[in-house]
Length: 405
Ligand code: PMP
Image (tube, rainbow, N blue to C red; front, side, top):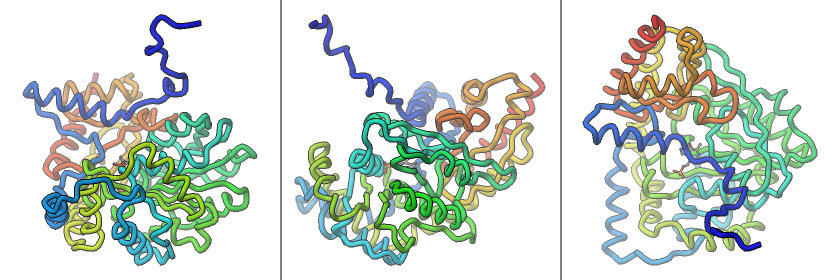
């Protein structure tokens, strides 16, 4: 039967998609700032450093030379080569440029990886808490997100619960997501955990979607195990990474996915249909980023390491908040159960109080589905060091005042 307003009849799977809370809160913070209120933001995961100069210069040169047309869908050859070179020199992998597709950010890399493999009825194991996007894309293709809670170890942070992951695997399991270093917890998982999950997945014929976009944000001497350094990674890996975080290039929209060469043609059919190619000048900038001076990246990471410590040390004085020292990425996901109990607030109400009454933006853990986040908030310390200090001090004061009621 024809509908009166067919254009309002959005299909069910799309209706199930949730947007990114971090973007919604960013909009609120911007609005408050426009109204003249000062907001210290621990919200969005976006480095506050400028894109390094030599990268910007490369983009300007490309622009001036008229490099402004469509490129190869997979990205210009020199960029695919630079990406393969980076991964191979860093992880001792043997990635060929033919196995790399440059994308419009890591988000489209995740999208392509999931679109290639997920069928209706498939299950995708997602450790909880997690970056929100994996579940949304899975749902779009009719697959079911299966959340497996991580273990919170006070003073240490989060670890995978390997036994629980193993128990969650069944004949419908098609994919396991490993995001390492981890958003929202700032954990860097022990190499044995990565190896064991890979082992389980191989044994059961399951694909690993590894999102290693924070691979340069490491704050301890503990080893980081990239899935690309597993000897037989090609058997079952979809590898995602990007330029947004490492080179402070969030707005340039450049990421990449590594896939088996056999499926690259189909992935490119999909990519060309969705976005044709990544931005041309961002690609030239990407080559300069990987092949140029990494000094600015090191300086930024050193500064982030100091911030992690500052945030940890100040929050240790808060009431009902259990901080820990983040090992990577640029997030802390402290448990706030004590504060919730004392105040009778839920985590969303707590975030609202902090924003409107104290001018400090944190994200409620519920933005990182599904259950674990109900007792946590996420703090991004990709924000000026002076703000990290001041914001953390305000949270300490707020925790005392709110506890008193
Ligand atoms: N993966 C993770 C784990 C992220 O945190 C983000 C950004 N917040 C992305 C992917 C998306 O990155 P991009 O800007 O490259 O699309």
